[in-house]
Length: 436
Image (tube, rainbow, N blue to C red):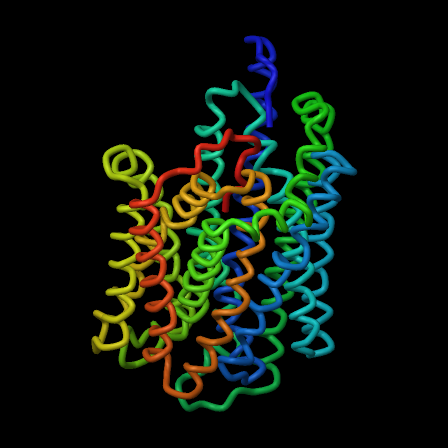
């Protein structure tokens, strides 16, 4: 993707447009991690097994595999501002499906709501990432994307704390261990879900109105750029499938997202256990903010200090190996130490996605647009690995389930070392990556 020279006057206007776009990154980070305390809530309300409740993440992340390619075509057809507003409207529709699901008391409709919300987020990512790169001087595009991702991480860090305060407080969660849950208490917990998603829907609606109000400014920022998105479509992904490094990178993304989501999804219930922290579900859910907050802090430390001094492939190998060791420690260590080990994994997750992404783009023999499209589709790992983790948790407990992310991180460590030893493909950069 190419950018025209930007004058000082234009830069000031683009800066204001970029500031408005950063709110989108915060919004989808917040909503994505809202699923973590929701899983603990649904498991208790519907009396689900871990395998059953992990269908929530399956429905959410499956949208990346199903919607990514149509999303690129939609953005190319509508343009950035209209596509963003359309994505936000879809997310509002998904949020409004949650009260319907609780009123008819049907878990299947919850899954449908998750898929709809994630479909909107997928379209939002396809549109917002390249747009953020365009809104300003070309030489500062990487800074803008990094800043946007920091806002995304902020959303993921505070969501577990705020949402747990609503979903996991009162109602059936106020009942002491071994106590009977009344119909009224269960109904109260269902209404808490309604309240949380109605508030989120209202905030997204206001955000959509705000983006629509600045649509002309956004349109002027990127005229004629929409056609570039088509190159990341089905034909482009087919080209990436012929590249060995594109396939290896896609596998690494698949495993990373799957491991990260699996741990985040089970942390509330894991920390709640008497043999770990032994705290109420609400407080356990709030602790999950440390997991995602560690990723936010690690992203800053990694980008500002480590990545300027250590080769990217080697750094990826080291942090992935440490994450694997921490997973092993969780499975074998008794007491609160296991809980802190699990929370610490978030810090080492921080740089994995962007480093895997860039290492793959550098070494893939396919175009950046084609490779980026394949890597974004690989986010579907967040749908698959949690199901495996859920089945193992049902069979042998949550500690044993940590062997799944442990193996995933070990494979990523091997990928990092191999990438450090391999040469870049030396192709020209033809499109920005769609960052996570």
